[in-house]
Amino acid sequence: MVAASLAVGAAILLLALVGLALQSNWLKLARVALAAAGYAAVLVGLLRARQLWDGPAHRLPYWPFAVAGVSGGLVSGVMRPESSVPLVVADVVGAGVLLAGLHWVTVRSWHRVRDAVEGR
Image (tube, rainbow, N blue to C red; front, side):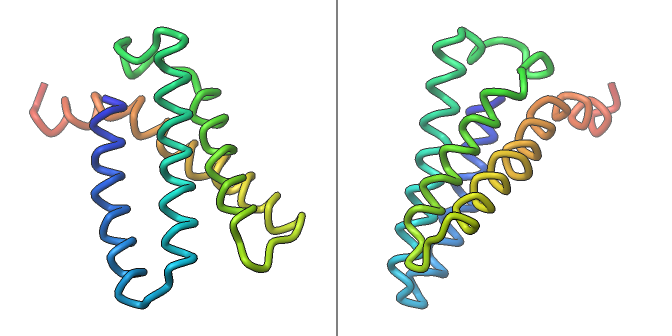
């Protein structure tokens, strides 16, 4: 399930990156792409290292998502042209708590949504 959610996220990310490329906003394109790649790499690495990758999605702990979110937020914050400590902290907290938390809740609850749609 995590792989599928990352694939959907990658498709959405690709649309955002195309928009940034059309605006010739290359620095932001690189920042967003590298932050997303960092998030995905850390998340997959942690889940595989802890042998959680193939486990049931509804039992996944929050902490791998939070650590991955913090790493992605750190990459994003450091790559900002006007980077400062408060901006980096905002990126780290925003990605670690909000984005990673939303991803975690979505992955854990997706089976309930799917079952409701399929009438199970």
